[in-house]
Length: 125
Image (cartoon, rainbow, N blue to C red):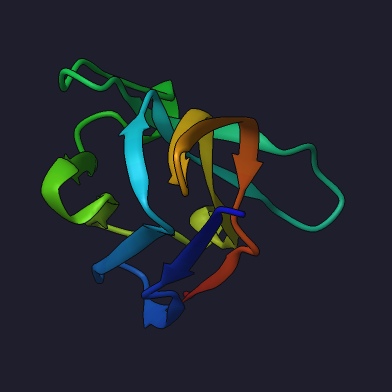
């Protein structure tokens, strides 16, 4: 089994910063694209930022220039540095991996579309 565990959410004032982390647990063989999504109350879940296995990134227009996604492959971790936060950035932030392979004994298992449990970010005005 594989799990994604997010951390780093919390309450911050507008203009402040937060850094989210997401660690993939298990005997990881490889991780493909890692992403951050967010979902505000009453709204659909939306892609915030994504990073490929070789470091190619893409961002939602609303966060370009203020959020930075990065990953540490040795630690099976993806980060989201969020600067200049606004109240409209308030949401539950979810980590997502489109494909992850783990080593289970003598076999390799592949999991698709894996989600974390989410971490709440609240930005006060």
